[in-house]
Image 1: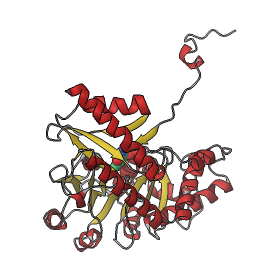
Image 2 (image 1 turned 180 degrees about the horizontal axis):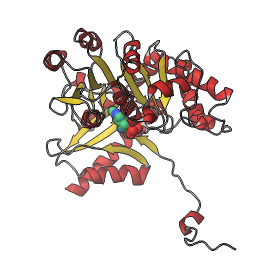
Image 3 (image 1 turned 180 degrees about the vertical axis):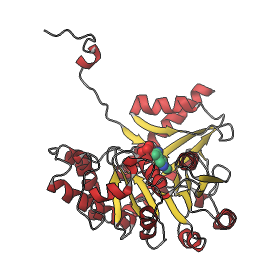
Length: 392
Ligand code: PMP
């Protein structure tokens, strides 16, 4: 008998226990039972006909979600970051000028990635908690003359909403491509990829689509697709190469080829989520998020909590950031929510929020219901009373 050098871990002899939890942080959101069920189907081969059909149906669903007719529309097998990586990797060649709008973590991260792909990056910054006016953006476009502008529609690290409508036209006047991060927005707020002339956009599946994390979905305009095919050198990372992955997803008039083994279980989950979106209707889903946000914002105000984003029109409805200075210990608050009610509220990702700590309340997908909002407000009231008593 062969003798193993490392013994089987004792911890793995214990049964797996996953608690019931209400995920009201900035993501992930809870997964819809229909999506969980879809994931329990048989696993299929990635080159099976049935998988191809699911991929084709997903492409239709993404086109509906993004409001686009783009051919190059697909999913990558990795989290939201892969959308950012794939777009920057494919659209940037070494020496290209890239303008990145930085008003939180996600712009900062995109700037870092763009540099790694050889981009010559200019960071356009604004005070945390604010968004970018089109005048400011246009002045940067005219000075920098970048090949690409990267901007985030919903900056989850601070809870700031960035208007996008009209920006594509401005970028195109300066011969600049527009790439937009939709990770916390599309499906919860309006987005029209074609009408707004956006060249590249992506989202993750674990927030508004309420699918377990593991896929990013994205789309490229015909203009962006041409830039990818006209590159002087191949994209730096094989895994993000849209010329090859796009062929597996049959985005071009060419036979499918193998790029990587996509998870058929995650594809089933995403298809189910997109099917539910089509059933409810995108405009109704957006409306549901708006109605829930109105109730949430009113409830938070009644609790005496302070919004981090001062101007109401700049607030992201899917992630509300609240600033806690000396009123109470924010950790005591978060622990109370988690331990007593298994409710996850997010905390701040940034250290520069004027000396205070952020609480971030998500409102996304399956959790965007009035019932869940009422539950969240009730727990937050108790948690605040508890944390204030502890602090006094
Ligand atoms: N962009 C934004 C705006 C996000 O909020 C996140 C995740 N919180 C990401 C990108 C990255 O997504 P992931 O963690 O799925 O890689």
